[in-house]
Image (cartoon, each protein chain N blue to C red):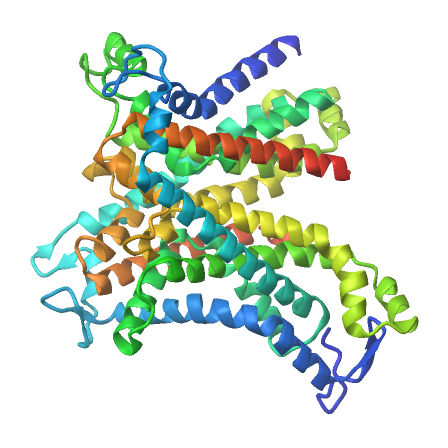
Length: 312
Length: 262
């Protein structure tokens, strides 16, 4: 839709039974798309710009935003605070990255058998199996997360089994802790990986797999050369859909982890909530945005051939 | 091949158990007599009547519904108009604008939540409006719903045959008549799907609501969160069970509706 003539003027054209000039296009865009765009710009993009602004301001004595310029907020999460080097924030960043990547990797490994199992079922069963993956996705994440507090409680059978094997002491709860956070994360995000992967597996050309097997490839090589290239788009989409919310989550570590499992999301919540240091909170938020954008860009590069419209 | 198949079935069974363990445990414990601890002490439905007599839970349910309906109506209208404009008319930097529309879809919800919190606080200091409450929650929900509606409706508009609308105009219909009698019925499934998605996103949202809510505008997810922070009680399990029930029925109905269309 960018055919301009030499004067930069869009020629009048007939569209949906109407003759439209460039002016008509602009007027109608403004009328139709204007209000929605304006809404998102005012209530999301403008606030994000404010966020950039206050990230270089300081916190006043009473928790208010003081209009003095400083780089201190960014130095702080790099580890250089007022009291010398403090590894707390660099650790949080690293931990969030590791947790996000590990959750994505674990979900991916789990999604493969489940997806191929569903794809191999007969039609009515297949729809049922697929609906069973969708239902948890539409069930509130908060509920599915706090339920693990019950499942991992000290007098629950999972904790007793762990104590019996000798992993933990008797009567010891399996939460809060890193294990509980991982369990909650994987359980909550698994459907995000299964669904896009399934969409790819459904479209797979199985004759390529059969050909590879006929030619004597072993299981791993069949997977690597005949299956993986075909399901790559689904893997990429699923990884993005898992990694981004996993990086930003604050509910799961908040309910299932202790202070040792603080992530970026919790750090943001703490600064905007109890600590009331909004400038520092804004700096952490910006960092989270940068990490997410880098992640998106990376996946986009890895999957450049598919181009735009990959996410949805 | 058979051995591999059994292994796959076994693994998948385990994964389904893993996915459903939290859902099942909440439902089971909502019928447990025991108030504390995780042992089973016998069947009861008394937590449901406790819940029914809990004014906080009832007002939270009301807030959740008011918020979801109000924001969905606004977002569906704005999002559909947005999609129509993007689909048919030209304006400068349109490509960039379409990309920007994906930002609310991809950024973590906590980023959106604190950005809005900050914005409302600044506005409050400057003009005295935007006290946190149901209004700010509706504004925030509409903001993340608009792009979802627009994306769904736009994909429906791509598949539309322009000849149908051209025929209507040729036969003398005004643009307004053409829209309501030809275009709108054709894109209605897309609008409905977009609206439904927006509605469930609003019902499900915790993070954005948590940061933009004020006193008296507690929603069900916020109520559950603050109760869990104080320690899980059986009536919260009962409340969660009812929410799960609504989600399951909703998902099954939508799946059946989609299948009927095909």
